[in-house]
Image (cartoon, rainbow, N blue to C red; front, top):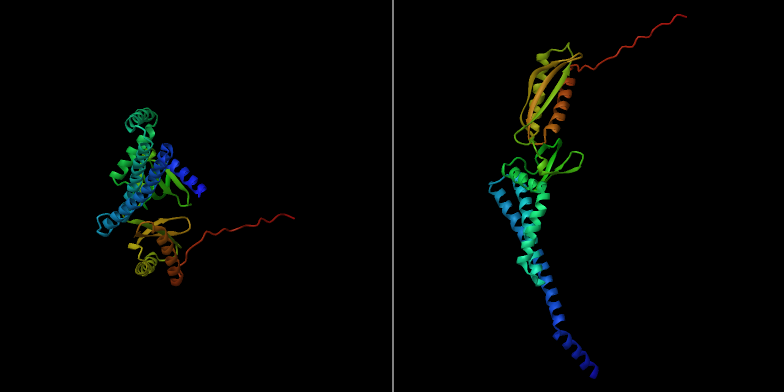
Length: 286
């Protein structure tokens, strides 16, 4: 029993030691701050997601716009929550918050003169969002880069190129934006026929084929319409076909128009010419 009493005395001494108790309190408060950060981040993220989902369901905002603002709200909320946790941690260690924030303000002002590009990024990103120039999943051309917008942030804009490359473009470098996703997209095809074929008959055959195609393809919003002769080349006469499609569906519809046109012309016996080369063999004197 003496050894047990000795162990109890050691524990009592540790628990009554001010350094030990202070350390335990700091560790406990730090754990609470960390756990609270993750809990509030999960709750806040869920509330933001639900808010934008409800706005989509009530049709107050389209899907692309909702995704854009949702990601932005998530970023702002995460940065704000992280700043609050840092302030709490400073307070846990007993450091004076006022002088630290004042010093941070002075340092931030000094850094700000050397970080004008960052400020320009934020200001430009704000106006891009305010003016609704681009949204997530839009097909755009920015800084001579084509692709699909994945995220519009306050500092950078992310564009996924067609080969899978993800481009991070600082907002201050966005001097002009070409948004290809606002309105219907054009699917235009030129079909060549021989000079010997009847143009009016060919246009009727193609229009009938396009009418059948329009009944099957939901991506076609208007047309396809056979407009007439688009050009006359060295080898053929080009018949132009135009359709309007949904966003990012124009290339698929173009391929289907070409396929339907080829099949219809083959069935009607209308010739699609190809360039031919004639070779002459020179006879040599023997």
